[in-house]
Length: 400
Image (cartoon, rainbow, N blue to C red):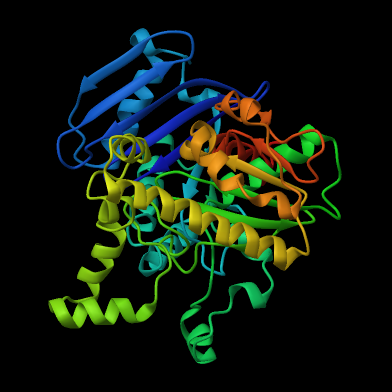
């Protein structure tokens, strides 16, 4: 059975076609510059790679081109779209309405769009993509929405309620939601599979580190706390996001600079983080190189990142009464041995000791890099959100 996994943005449409019998990716690609020209990259596993300019006025034309690439020419992998049994869509925000993956209906699409204030950059295009997908694939192909927020719905109120007047939670559902949930869920589930242990009684911390980053405290296999909040802006320093800061900083800058709320949101989401502090780049690799070249602000950026991750790690260990494993994933977590080493340095007090040689060889694969006598396991587990979405899609659609 083949499942198509979709991750739509305002001007992009990433996709993977997965054969679920062996959970192998058949092909994948990305339609870019939707609404402003168009470009598609389509890669067949072990085969052709196609790159070409296109005209994508809307997501519908992008979906039509994806179908054409999969069914004809050098990129052909299926004879007909009828071979695709279901489509899974990544959705950023489900608020408190969607606590698990959900079969897509017209009402669900409307609700996802209505949640645009909570996910302004993601929810609207994801709703648009669902409508376009239905137009192309027809109403008989089941679609499933898999929410970034759903894994975190097991948090207790003490983890998700903000200390503001309670009426705003009641009126507007303002609370901590958390994101990267599909990644945290995959990595934690994979950890239990690899170790052959039951989640009950376990305490682990998953570190999804990339251009956007979050940590998740997981007890008994369920989310207990997480670093992102109402939106993905909260937490610690990221590529262009500030992470959590004193709220008075926002009003102070706004008053001094005469900025509107929307302009302040843009400043904190797109001009802060690695980019804002370093003045070099939003990419951790560029910043590390600049730091090695003597750039003091770049080094400061690296120092802030490590400092803030340690703060969350220590806090979550205290919340859970200890920790059994710390797991790294995401672009930085999987690939940057220097960041992993720096984060784990000085953690011996809580039983975490790493082997630097193992850590240097741990990138891009499932690896243990803690020492044999370490009381806390340190691991790299590459994330696979797409397979998690595909699995949910089959289950929710009643196909397995």
